Length: 327
Image (cartoon, rainbow, N blue to C red; front, side, top):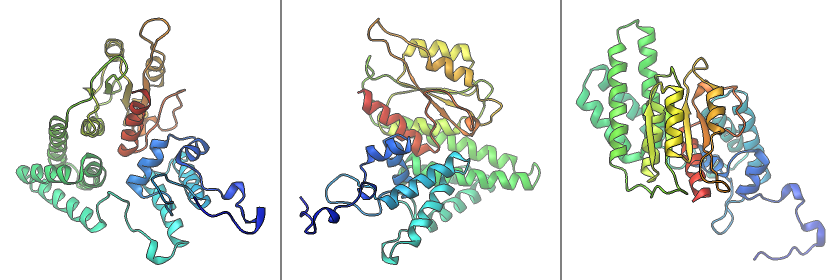
């Protein structure tokens, strides 16, 4: 225990100065504790100072930075940009020796650029074996979350910009790269460890694109990342009809349903509300799924009780946290 202050009551910090636990901070910000942990892991937005022991303690300065990040993301700023703004703000007020340039668990900036540049060049050459090898190496070395967010997505965006600026010259490059990204993610899923037992208490996660939505790579990445944790999933892929998805949810009784929407034109709040209202089980022990609305198509949409991850790391944290709470 720390020593008692020697100057009486005036030596004690005020309530506003007392460091907060992760749970208390999560309640204050209105987010899940797993979201705070995923932000710390992915972006380095964590406590500036660690107390002795295993528990995090968030100082008023940490709280102010996270409040700013929440404000920025709620106004539509991408989470990576919001996190950078918050980290820059903290770095300006910290001694130079204690500053960090990258988040824990992330690739050093030079490595990110090298990985993306090499992958993009292989794709432009249509060198499928090299693309396959580099993707497999990235996933194997860094894991699905980091490989997706720092290597796959930036390279896909770079190739997409090249295609957009050169007409149809590079459409074959984007198709080849997308195919091999999907292949790498599926192979990662098949190589994942044993899944936890599926029981009436611990059920699978259903992953599906909303009707009319063809973009599957992001939920394929989530499927692979959850597989790394041994969590059971059921992947339904692109453009799942509402009736078929409802029937699958009733049959499986999933712990969570992840609905991906790339565009606002495909997002269906009515479908999300319908799935959130489904119940099953015997009277007195009825259960319902958590609904996770993933993708930029849900921006500005509000569905009561639905969860809204902003990144792959955030989605993994939300789903795994829900498992931990119900197991």
